[in-house]
Image 1 (cartoon, rainbow, N blue to C red):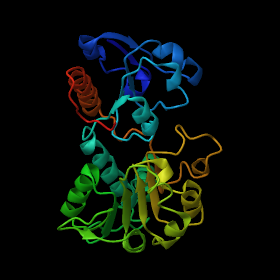
Image 2 (tube, rainbow, N blue to C red):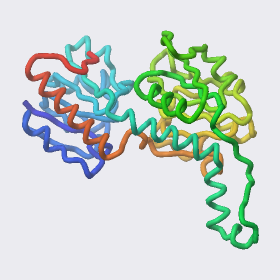
Image 3 (cartoon, one colour):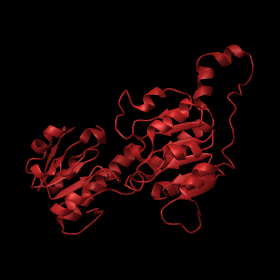
Length: 315
């Protein structure tokens, strides 16, 4: 059994990938460009990827591949239909980053609602020391208690965010394809109109692509906080940037982008650095603990596949 890791750099240099050696001959590449794919995969049976796009555009040159392991939950970078046609098994990892993503979501919301960037600067630039007053209370900030937190997508991460939001005293409303007993479920337009904070935790598919459209962004309250830690293409990124530029939204926190990293001509480049904007480099999933769990779960997926059973199978 030959195993190849194609984009190890996305997992971090501090992660030991030797755990895969017990299942076969291991080769590790830090990255794989399109033109390198066939050479890097060569005659491997198992390929392990994170962000790399794999499908009918590159797999035909690698007929030996029997199993694709994604070190992630989302699999929109995999042509699953092609893999199914070719009999290639595909596995993902579920639940390894729930706490991390929820943690960043809440951190973004609290930072934006408390205007921490502005208050930190008032001290670090000397304004507080020169002012001669014991406190600075502008910009005005508000309690999160009693606010309405809308959650788009209510899987493991959405539920964890919901639990924290409720603990902070928020009313939680949920948008999901199927209603959930015990939760206040609403349609997406109602959620956009009524929420003070909106966080997105839905996978990217044809039903969710562009879900947060320009029309729905226009429905949001002028002081709403919007957070996307799901997939960039769930949101109309240009419309969201325009809402910030025009003062039609209170603040945004974004960890994911339709193209990663986003280029210098991306709509978000025009708003980067603003006090009411937090951009992070797709790191919400990636605490050390989560990355270790993710790689261990991937190893278990390989072990189970070798034994002829199924685990975390997408295809």
